[in-house]
Image 1: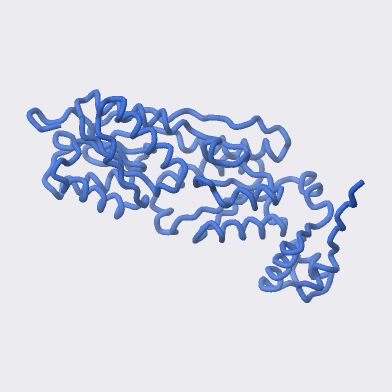
Image 2 (image 1 turned 60 degrees about the vertical axis):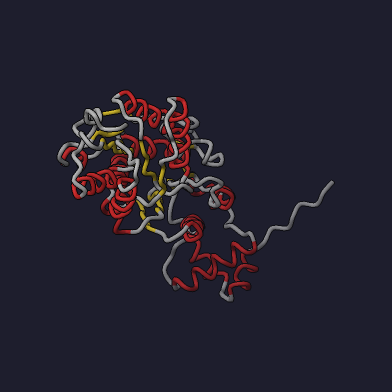
Length: 346
């Protein structure tokens, strides 16, 4: 019979960090008296030794969850301008408020910083669970965050989320609907301006776009991966419209890029939708305030955020129902899409 591995003790963690046993206890119980630098040194020592406080997980399951963590790897300026995350967070907050729970939001520079942040939050008992967003293909966050044993819900297709309970939308079907709609209007040169290709949902949309264009006998190579800002959308749109065989319709991965694209079309003397049709993702008030109003793949983002928060409480309570798919974004035609101008090459 094998010998059970020896359990690392709190005394060993204290020795490794160069502090007293009491300081380790204060750090992991989030009590005052330990400086941030010392607290981090203690957490690093515990991680290196593979030590976690005895009964931490059990005590967390017994107490009421007071704080939920959400880390987002986006620049602060962009996040403040992006309607999606504002609506998403408001939906989360609606559910958390009903549970007398708060959201702890942090913006991080990269995925490594995000991993470290969740490890610190969980081991210091700052949060009772987390919402994980913006999954990448082969996402490096999955192994270390699963090892934590932290209750978490992933926002993304189950194929991307490494076994975390997930809440997701069918982006592939929505992309197919968008392309078929534009093709039915008579467009043959359709482009797509997507987010960073490393993001899982952007990759899913890109694959669906290419596949649908091929099924319709159209050229699906006009895809550009970029950031989500208006500046990115404008720059890429300008490049597409300077092509000798410029597209007559463009699908954008968010509303900010689509509105920026409309401004570029006007700058270049093109009329929307006669010369160029534009279609945004994630309908928002911004789409309805442009002239002409922006056609969009509408998605109840507020409700989506609420579903994510409810799913997290299900994980924490042990009543998780699997990987719920929420309503697929659906087409809302407005003034920015229409048939190509008569006589215009398509």
